[in-house]
Length: 389
Image (cartoon, rainbow, N blue to C red; front, top):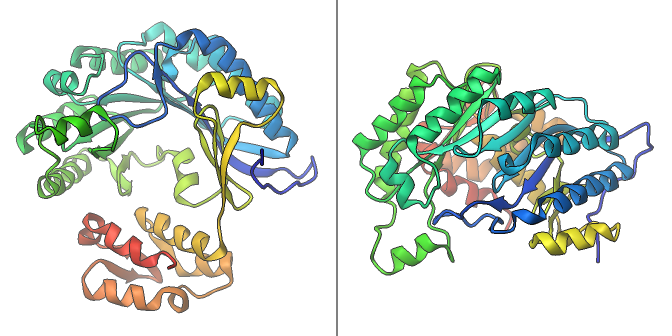
């Protein structure tokens, strides 16, 4: 089985990469979720954590250095603080990780103040709370196992424990969600005073229970025009509360931007560890074995569990750097593009840029290229034209 291509610098000259660790265990699976996660397999967690640590050691042997650590899922908060500590400590020793930002996704109903204090003690300094909605009817419809009261309690527990950086996840475009109900969600979110908020427009993913409900006519599909209104309202409410949009779907107080996610948006290398994790190293995208038990067996045999790899051509990497950069409010610097690729941004994409300018989707300011407000709502129209044929 091939492993991802990666440079092999000297031990004293490690190559930097973000580190994403996937925890694929859940109490229940939500109706909209197409992530690689499993309910009823929590008994595998101890073996799984041991395998994760071994996988990180193998990437350390390939001379990578972790710059950020993000534990996502699934439900990472199902891990004990001791299990989280094992992962963080292995990243330190094997990947020369010097925390830095350490984020853990936490689901309400699985956490309390003592747990957050323990996480702080083992190095976690940022928590992302998967609230999704402040309406119990929405949560029930989505098959979330927590209530609004649980969500508020989880946030309050993290704050009381002293977590310095708390992010909230919210979903918009939910079935039967009105603009007024969405405004109420936003107001309740801002009342908690989070440092960061991530928004996700509902997507009906093929193969999910939600997709089957839509196909049978039991649930209406998301309304694109209403979702656009919801997005604009969110930006208005968040801005009034002092949060600054720094990426299309993310707002933060200044200095609280998610550094790990900026690795993705700057199109920089990142290690994907764990069952079903995706990574990008040495100009190659790769993905791991999906099933936790198979992943564990592979790693116990001292081999990386990579099952797919995709070399990224120069033209595709260059286009993706522009696309990801346009998602950022900082836009794409023509000078930085030239420094990275030795090519002129206009020479490469002048025709696409000019056409998008005519339609009011892109604009130049101080030698940087930006999506306009209209362009944010129609960004895929721009991105598709930037990709190589």
